[in-house]
Image 1 (cartoon, rainbow, N blue to C red):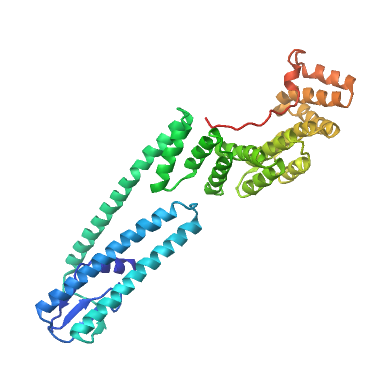
Image 2 (cartoon, rainbow, N blue to C red):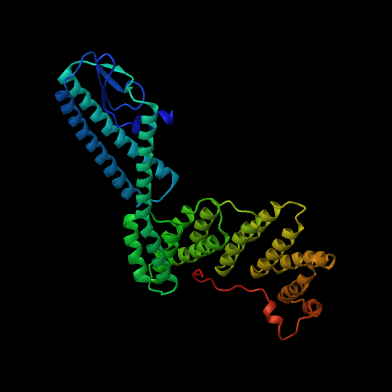
Length: 400
């Protein structure tokens, strides 16, 4: 099918006289019934005028194709680039292109009938060799390759503009220039995930918190379901920070959950997201749901995956302490320490586990038990404060 369409499009012949002297004009169909057959010989003069009319129609169609492509492209790039939007743009383009072709086909058919009368529809088969057909196809494919290369060259400046935006944001810290270049870029090229990241940082540094948040949301959504540990952690963390500044912590958590749940994550990545959300909740005195998130995470583990169980439980104990559940934290540290004491694989973790349990015991005024744990940790008294569970106040993170 595709081969037939290619041969039809590549064939430049629009008229021929068959062996019986009958005239056949080519119409605008691609496959069947693409020949208008007249059971008579038409004078060359009339044929020439008809083909001139056809040439004008073809020029109009080509211009329509170009303008439709350019206009839809320029409109499309100002919307969020998704599969759905791409399909809609393609359908609109096809509707316009097919509509123009149908109109021209109707006009050309009317022209033929007005000059030469009714015709019969047949297969348009000009008397040329297969070799000639192959040459036509090669020429057409060659032109298509040239057009593709020219389109590629038109996108080449986008690489330089994007690099300029990146340099202005991360190296020169010239945020106003970065936003100006980005605006110019958006007139001609679709914004990608990196563009939205650059824009978010530049807008934040220019005190446009709402714009920065919007760009980060677009970046997360545009990046799709795949989770990029290095980038998405920063994006989602900054979204928490920005949304809190613009509204309140609870709405920030709701937005975080909405965006994070659309990502496909493994256990390690999920644990990082739960950790970020837990630290944010603790900082903002929201303890509801913290332990529940860790319980769900632990329940999703393979029972034989002791390594992940150990480190996720360690995180759960840590956040339990920060959330003020000191008894719950001590119970978790008890099970972790018991397991580590009997498994050399986790022996190196005992130092911090003893110290963290000691601080938890201090909170419930079990000072003898705390002293025993501090001794077991073998940490210098001058270094103990480094091991006390704490959280750092969240800030806006600018990627390296």
